[in-house]
Image 1 (cartoon, rainbow, N blue to C red):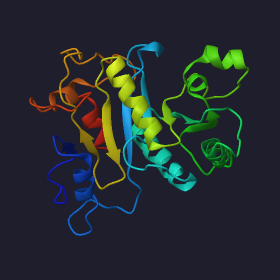
Image 2: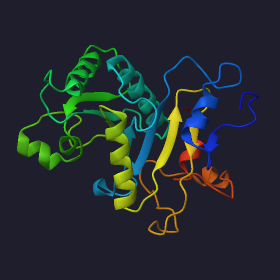
Image 3: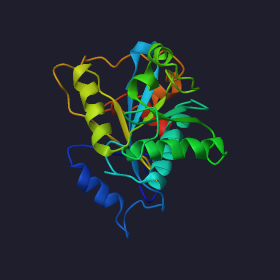
Length: 240
């Protein structure tokens, strides 16, 4: 990777801890000075074919503070830019739509929304705090009277903690029988993972005929063996 002979570091059976330790090695790793963070990319069929939603950070930063969340947000936006979404909508999640000191995640969400409004976060649309249903359902937002450019249309879900993001991503993975795309960004090259086969997962890869469809050229570049989940994700992420 350091010699430029590969574009993506693909995780196999090795544990995530071992992989990240190698990536962060001061002498032989892929450090850039940026915060590393994890993005799951799922197919949200409830919004139409080929519509993607990102879940972050479900694998690297356990309890990020607001500065770390800003870096996590920027990393996720970079992933969605690479997937062809010029101005992704980011929902900063909490259990409430009103900032309250009893929920630190709601306070952090409000702060990130303020940074966006001040023009310090660009090339995306940010709002929060938003509950999950407000982020994904226009109907739920309308019932609660929530007016937001993100409500019901979120491309990226920024969770308050690693536990919340990880549990949600894995619940979706097993309840809906889909293999999410998965990438760690912030290093000198993106690090992706290949989930093991499961009996409940369809043998064929879902078709993505919407805005993030792979081109014929991209398809021709896929390796014939052990493709990553969402195989068309890999070429896009070389831009990260």
